[in-house]
Length: 231
Image (cartoon, rainbow, N blue to C red; front, side, top):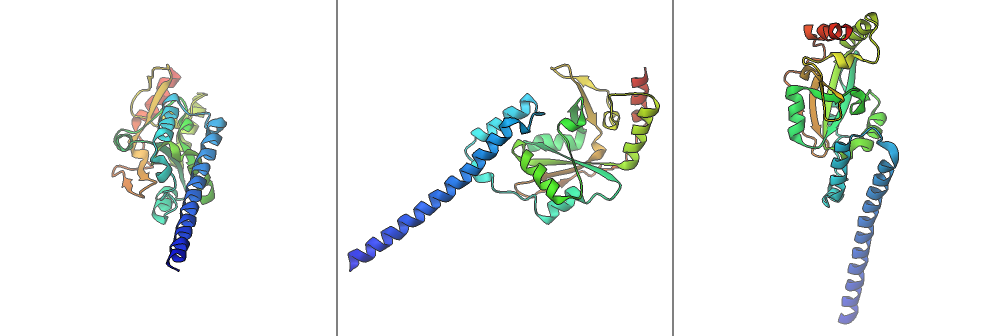
């Protein structure tokens, strides 16, 4: 009788272990399928540096455990990203290191040529935000939240049109510093830090706000930038 009880306990333990292995394999299969899909062309606009960062994350074994931890859907995170008022334009950008996130809060957001290469527009549509998040979250656990008032965006879009300046958008104008060329000879612009609302760690839910945030910020340097483009 004792042998039978031990045998039953052994069988139950074995079944539990098999179920555990099956769940672990299922998680890894989901991760692999997502990775293959991303590498097949979804992220064509990524830079070499960002692709290398992504590949490094794949190489890191702890990615398997952290992949399923996500606080983006917490009400506080969604509110911080989406609740910016009716007359605002909101964007998100992903970065891997908190050092970079803090630098963006203090100095502003750098982008090469086009703002939209690395900044995603977001709206009140939570489903749209979730889809964009799942397509980008492996590029960094820190989400930079950018917010610009429609008044500022529309005013400088109009000024560009009035000056007959093409191939530039209002984001290229909202900088306090002149653009510089990077190693690829692309012009790098720095969106003023006042338009950075803050950042979120989407794995822990931590929110860091920018005390200098002002989506209505307007500087005399912005009109200077248009004058420079004219000349």
